[in-house]
Image (cartoon, rainbow, N blue to C red):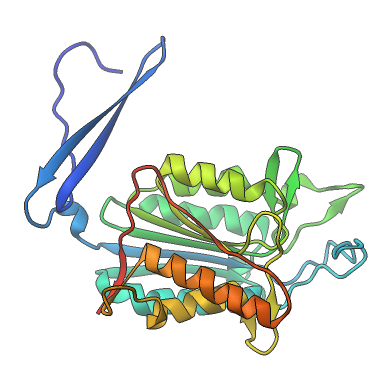
Length: 302
């Protein structure tokens, strides 16, 4: 709470134009003002501090039984979510890490050697605490892959220990989307989300798009709201991750052949996944979301 009067605030700036949004809240309501500031030369926000990477990949669902597929009678296990998580982290660290002073990563996948690195509900909720360490000059990348469901107006990500409790899922064995969303929204710095949840259902992409817009997050999803995300045994990966890695490795470079922006990556992934899906006689169109103030920025430069 502030009393009436002037206040001085230290605001980190980037090169050229900066739109500083100020939100004022009291018992009556909320008012938002935007101040545009110009800064000559590189500023504090142009520095690249620590690269935080959190990747979650779930292949195994022993507690769900044969309750998946179009008829609801197929095994729920996936094939490449863990492999996708590992490969995406490797590509992000290799391509983005060079531009940062430090890299901190956490991978939760089936087959992990340490129990704390298995993608259980408790481990996932603990792992998102890593993001609280980020500052304004850091970059945060979060990737999730596995099953998800719409439960009324709420979306749930299913960890490897998800299990049924009668006709419903046991509450302690699912991860509410708002827990992941809050962790990403409240952290600082550049924030990028890759969501490969092929069973997320109808409302999820709209929900993610709205959250990304208001929280200024760059977000990529594997498919449209009405599509499943496909895997390809020949590639050994999901189409989405395969295309993202190709793009980061240089194929997504746009008008500048020595850099890749967030928009360049989106354009490449959408086109490439469409081609790969067509080879499987399927349709899959990744989606790209960004916030109201989040500009396309350089991901990789060499």
